[in-house]
Length: 611
Image (cartoon, rainbow, N blue to C red; front, top):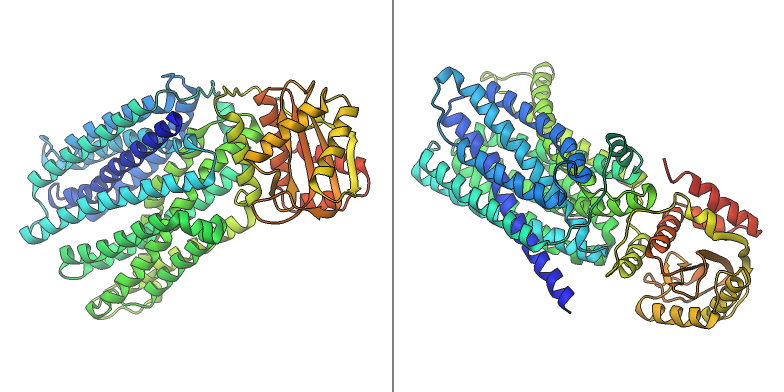
């Protein structure tokens, strides 16, 4: 009970801390641009150049920071120390960011670049460390979905409220150059960011050490984790589509009159849509599955962007339609961003099973890098669209290129959504009930135990024996199947006491059914009754009910036994889950007619798991 209370308290603190991060990021992103335009009086080209430099610098620093945190070369209490230190540095940069430079007017451009680059690097340090904590709360997808969505919902609510209040003030004061308000807002936001980070640092007392990562290990952790590469690609397309739509809509608002009022009118529906998406995300995942909700989010995003193409942003008559289309797109954006956060957390577990390295900050540095890289790429696409419009669009008397530039940019956003969806459908495979339930089993066995990273490279090779494999076993109920496989494990001397093993299986199944999903059951137990790790395998001629979460009867059984050693058990189940999660592999095992055929296929597949 105490552990659950501590966990709930840590989750609540994490959610509150997310609000501080959102406030800091939103405040700086919006009002620093206003500061550059109306206070420092920089040209549009200078501002674009600065944003490109900041974006690319943040991208590079994200990779470097992810490696440094997990390698623990500087501090031992990795992500927490980096998060707190990065938040302190970010807060400091924010306080001096809105101070007028004491140098001459000609030096305002380098001043703006230096301070914004420093802020970006500092924020990236804390951002990567912060979101990597998502994977430390729970291995259950339902908990991860709830935590990440609530954190983002509160973050959008608080940051949206802060931005709306400031914009309303600017609107009524009829000025965008109120330096006193900008400094006050920066001070408050910096205080919120640092205070929430300090709360989180105090709440998390024990973050497991990840071990020293060489630079070579860093690249192996990235390149060898195919699901992480897929997720990173999905996130890059996702963030690029978001930034393209924001750049296009912002350019349209700046072109029209009543800019301040339109900023508020556009922001509020978009904020409401994202909050709605984040709040509803966990329940929607239960109804449609996480795969279904991600595909739905992509469809909604694409539809919202596509509707924007048909509006003329230069006309006040179309403003209502543009607002509704933009709000619809933001509904999809909320679901999509919540999904990719959980996907990244799952990739950490996947990489641990596959590469024997648990590197949460290396994984989440890709999420940070995708966000930093998206804005400069979007600005580049917008500039190219502007040039392309001069060739294909007949200019009117006023020489307005807003319409073709707007439409080309939005069309690029639609294209990136399509690429995101294709990448997900073709390559991502950690979304099924099978993988979710395997993670649940692993969490149950990790609880209260110190799990090291000392896994053997190919555990299945030493645990599988052809004598413990049966094809087309004929039994009438699950208990008979379990007893047959238990007797085989006794025969190969993997179990010393069948009675103790069966009792352990019974207790385990009372907590979690042996049925995983997709017709697969994995009854398992660890204890002193086992002399060595082993797996007994059986395909059934008639499926039996092992109480799987998806309701499907099982005809492929893997019985795992190992000594009371969590490392060995987790290594076995992790490797087995990766193999069985491969598309079509379990069906090939079901079609096997000989024991050696099943054994060979599993061992050949295992050889390719480690790169």
